[in-house]
Length: 302
Image (cartoon, rainbow, N blue to C red; front, side):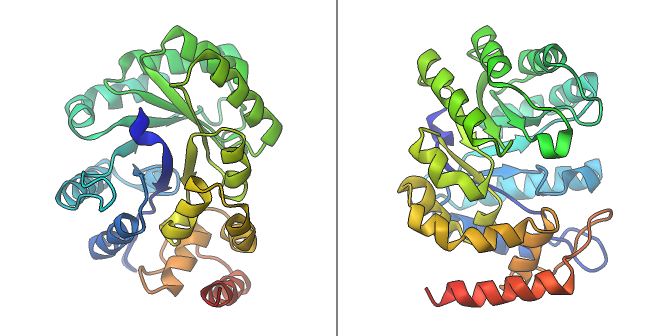
């Protein structure tokens, strides 16, 4: 899975004022990612508001991105960017059904799926192990686990992660770790390094990416890179702590009232999209929007 090292963008889904998907804005955003040098793109994840979209909309967005990426190779590799597809949920059988329906599409177009820990159910570590074991067995492409306790209410522990990998090393390729627990993530990096050079521990937190890269992480799946791909590429590829520090306040503001509200405010101020979200998400408050605009102006002077 060497094509999933480096910087991945957790792509937003732009919407119009009438609620429909804004495909011209999506095209502008994809151009920005390719020109900015990202290494891969995560499609229809949490940041993409996939949970609020119909099956027909998800299919249309997925196929639009596939066509665009295949027609616009990366200037770095001269090949289409790898794609990762968000496929997760809190009903194991339903996730497996989605995988079966997507089988041919995944095989042809996606390097991996990104599958989040089951939310709301609050399974035990054994329940998490059984859930992801079944998903890995059913998936036609490798699985990136996704640990984000702040959203799911459960924490996938390093020992469970390595148990999953050791049981199916050909199917479990890595993890997007967004627990925010630096010590836990570093412990996982150490366990993974002792087990295999192939298992990817990927930061899911823009604010600690440089620190985790220095500790041996394989990269970052970033929200901020929707707007700032070049500089977050520097943070990841050069382990640039100074650049990380410059963006600390912006990263704080991006998540001050939830994701993707902050990144959509930012992209709207940059003229790339309309600032539209789907309920239950709403745009940032006027106060946060003003702070983001001020911080954007400050960053533009660096």
